[in-house]
Length: 139
Image (cartoon, rainbow, N blue to C red; front, side, top):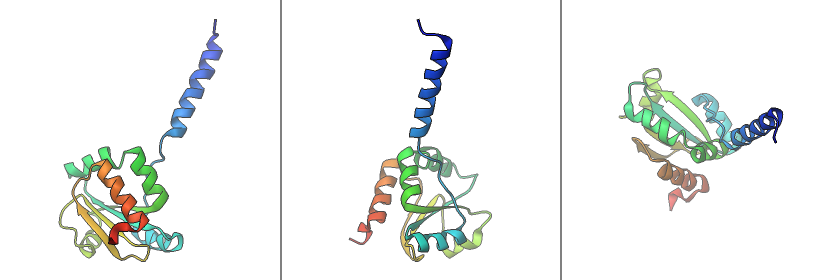
C-alpha cells in the first residue's frame, strides 16, 4: 500500500512535468529594445497594438496569444512588442493603426511586412508566424 510520502512525491513529479511542458509566457519588450534585438538576433518583430477597453483585444489575448504553440513560436522566432495605444499614440500613428487589435510584422531591419487588424484565431495566427519566419511571405 502506497504511503502518503510516496503519493506526495508522485504528485510533485506530475506537477513538475506538466509545468515544464507548458510554453513560457510571452517575452514582451519595448519597441526601442526590439529594434536593436531584432537586428542583432536576425528576428522579425511582432507589434501587438491593444487597449484595455477593447473586447476583441481580450479575445486575442485569451485565445490566440495564450495558446501554447503560438507563445512558443513567437518566443523562439520573433521579438514581440505589446503596445497600449492609449499610452503610445505616436507609435500607433507611425504604423497607421486605425483599429485594434492590430497585428503588425516587421523585418529584422524594421521594414513593414504584414499588417492584419482584428482578432486572429490561433491556428491562423500560427500559420502567419510560420510564413513570415520562413520568408515565404513574399511568394
